[in-house]
Length: 295
Image (tube, rainbow, N blue to C red; front, side, top):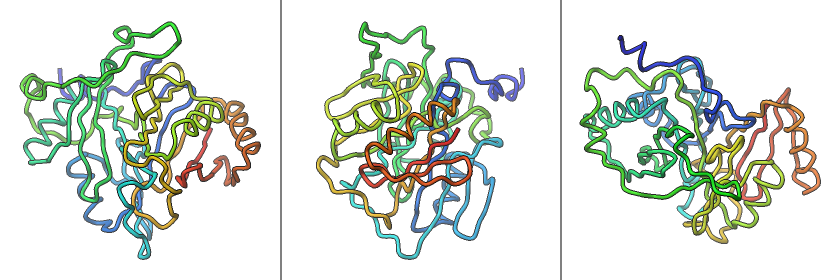
């Protein structure tokens, strides 16, 4: 078979992260050096430019926009403990694609920050040139996940054998992320976990799928997580300032507009201001992170 037949699926399975009632479909970063960071995401992450404006660029896979990069002359560098991005997680279609990206990264001397087997997934971690965290991962089949009686899913952080992953994949030329790659989840730094539970579970309606010490994982449709929130660097930190580099905002896409309407109504009860622009609602979460709700 050709690479395109085996490596670039065009259909998304019914239990895929992006097929759930709600999922993350876009991330927006403010960067200091737009040309340098954009070139890096294209060369190392294999994203393609889809749209260019006076203030930035949108990159993606196929016709799917995933990441917008903008720059601002008055942006200040976000401190390590500020609420914001822990990592943007790019979900590739399968283990072979994860290995092919790993081989590409190794051949380009990309420094990795870690690699883990989470039982539900296999993940590789790194950061872009301005320190924005990135995860590249593949999901294991749901038939291999261990759901507990309370509805949560068993997750762990075990070592991932990168050498074995590298050895088992073909080393032919890599032409970027495979069709079907998307943002499987976004992992945030927040100030308080009970506040995160109240916001993502009770207001936005995502299920609480797992807990780690200092972190909660929220998913739609029993997916292991579309959003994670931790306080590992940011416990008790003040709200994020508007003019900071890093995560400006991200988008959660709802399949059902009524579910989004329910979330918007709950935001109103919390006194969180929501702006409507066309069919998208925009807000700033309790930690100063921008969030868009689309349907």
